Each structure stands twice: as structure tokens, then as C-alpha cells.
Length: 117
Image 1 (cartoon, helix red, strand yellow):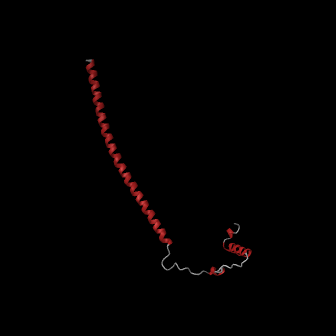
Image 2 (cartoon, rainbow, N blue to C red):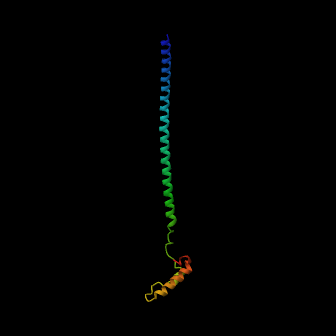
Image 3 (tube, rainbow, N blue to C red):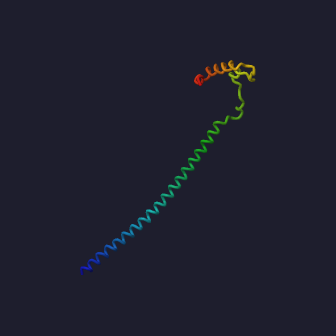
């Protein structure tokens, strides 16, 4: 009788443990399915983000390329007023010291920060 009651008690614990195993197995299956779904959603989101970044980069490159290109007809260079300062043909008989002085004077006038370099 003591053995029978212990046997019934052990059988009850065993069936309770089996039900718990079934419940946990089902729960693991559900969680794995959720995980797979979320993993797929994450992949789709990453792909969409990557595609959007690529489109944005292309648009930015396209925009910067067009902003650097001058409109038709404006690629003709207009003579500037500073052009008269320097003669069109180099003078081979000019003194090197005189040339240095002219360059230094132009540097002082236009780029004073570069004079000491």
C-alpha cells in the first residue's frame, strides 16, 4: 500500500513532467517561428535601407555632377581685366631677379598669406 501510493505519486509527477515537456516543446516551436519571421523582416528592412542609401548616393552624385557642368554656351572664356598685367608671350631676355620681384609684388597684392612661404 505504501508502495502503491508512492507509485501513484511518481506516475503523477511523471505525467505532469510529460505535459510540461509538451508545453515547452510547443512554446519553442512558436518562438522559432517568430524568430524566423522577424529575421526575414529584418533582412527586408536592411535591403530596403541599402537600396534607399544607394538611390540617395546616386541622386547626390547626379546632382553634384550637374551643378558642376556649365550650361551650354557658357564655356567660352571671357577676357578678364587682370589678363593685361601679364604679357601673352614670355620674354626670354628678362632678368631673373626682376622676375622674382614682379612675382613677389603680385603675391603681396593677391596672396599676402603666401609671401613668407
